[in-house]
Length: 223
Image 1 (cartoon, helix red, strand yellow):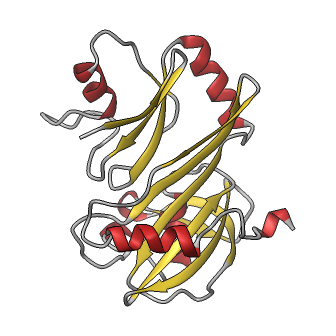
Image 2 (cartoon, one colour):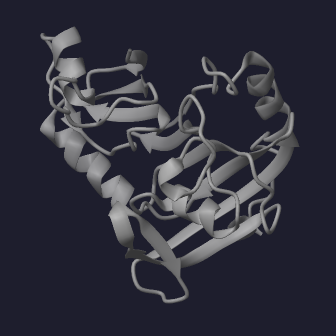
């Protein structure tokens, strides 16, 4: 079930649940169709997307001008994004930058190469949590399956992401946690704690607040 985090005349920020596709699938409503059904008096325009398995924050515009503005902001990397992920495997490195070219692979997958073509850059920190590995991620580019491929490349595929070798779980454990941007001269920040799933527990949400405090972290590209 979609929930509304913020709404204005220009845009809404919503929480997309894991397992909901952006577009409709057979008889199952997608994000845009669900919004249209729940709020028939409002027109919505897509701004960006989340994979079906990913939960968390999503922006939808309320008119064409806002859609164009957000489109330019995303293209210019003016929207800061943070993601939370869990893996059942230990990564090759605990923090740093994952960089490489994204190319199509088999069965609808993507893979990371050493080329600069279709370059994807992801910065991350990680910490252990109850036998799992928790990741706090900052994508500097916005490629298809970017974070899923990045974590697989360091030996820690996302829990529940069976397409990329993650262990079976009740859901894919990737969550769009935070969005930051400036809108009409005002700095905006939206945070959606990762809760409501087997491993995204209340205890884990508190763990994230303590161990992944963005105000205290020194991201590689900010040094």
